[in-house]
Image 1 (cartoon, helix red, strand yellow):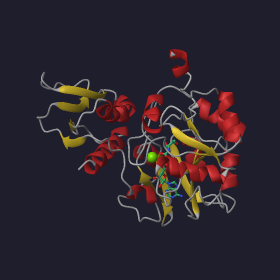
Image 2 (cartoon, helix red, strand yellow):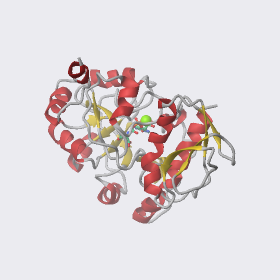
Image 3 (tube, protein in one colour):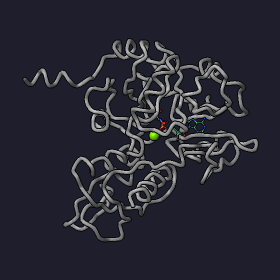
Image 4 (cartoon, rainbow, N blue to C red):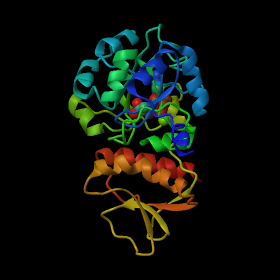
Length: 315
Ligand code: TXA
Ligand code: MG
C-alpha cells in the first residue's frame, strides 16, 4: 500500500520536533551548514544516544547550538577576549567558538573536556526550535566517518527512514562551521569551514593561524576518519572515467562528471561538495578521480581540505 509505505518516512512538523526534543528524543535538524542530529542539553541520556547512533568515539565532543548571546553566556565559565567582536560579526552563522565550559554543561556533551564548542545557527527553523526548547547539542547528521548530510535523503541513507527529520531543504552553505579555539592568548582555526580565514582576521584585526595538527585534547575531532565515501578516490591528473569536478571545466567526452559546482561561483562548490561525494555511493561507483586543481582561497580552502581528507581516508 503506497500511502502506508510513504507514511513510514518520519518527516515531522515543527511542533512535533519541539515535542520530541522536550521529551528527550533525537531528531535530524536543518542548519545552514549541514544537517545536525539534535538533542536537548537538558537530556544527558539522549546526548549519549547520539554518540551510539552515529558510532562516534566517546572522546569527541559535540557542539552546543544556542539562539541568543544570553544562552551562550550561561554555558560559559568566562567570556574570552574577542568573543564580542566575533559574535557580533558572525552570529547567527557558521562559526563555532570553543570556550571554557560552565560546570553545569553535561560532561557527555563536551566529552569530559573543560571547554565547550558553541554556535548560533542562522537557519530559521533551527533558531526557532532552540528558542522553544533551549540549547541543543548537534553533531553533523551522518554516520561517523561519512560525508556530512546536506539534504534529507542523506540522513535517510545513513540512519533509515524512521529517524524523525525536520525538513528544511538543502543546506545553503553545505560545509560545516569554522571552529575557533584559544591557545597561547589568541584565536586559532581548529577546523576550516564556512567562515574564511580572511573574514576572521579582518574582524579580529590579527592573523588567525590554522592549527594543522592540534593536540588531541585540544580538538579531538581532527584525529578521526572524516568525509569519506566508500568509493576509492584518486587525484585527477587527466585520466579516469568518473570525475568529481566542476560544471564550468571541460573534461574528455568519455568521462562521467559528478559536479560539485561551478568554479566561477565558489559557494556553489561548497554547497555541492558532500552531495557529490555521496552520489558516488548512491550509484555504487567503486573508483573516482577528484579534480583538485582549483585555488585554495576563501571558502575553497575548506573545500580543498575536506577533499584532501576524503582522498587520504579512502586509501
Ligand atoms: O556546522 C557545524 O558545525 C555542524 C552543524 C550541525 O552545526 N556540526 C558539526 O558537528 O559539524 P560535528 O560534531 O560533526 O563536529 C564538531 C567538531 C568536532 O570535530 C569536535 O571535535 C569539535 O567540533 N569540538 C566540539 N567541542 C569541542 C571542544 N570543546 N574542544 C575542541 N573541539 C571541539
Ligand atoms: Mg561531523
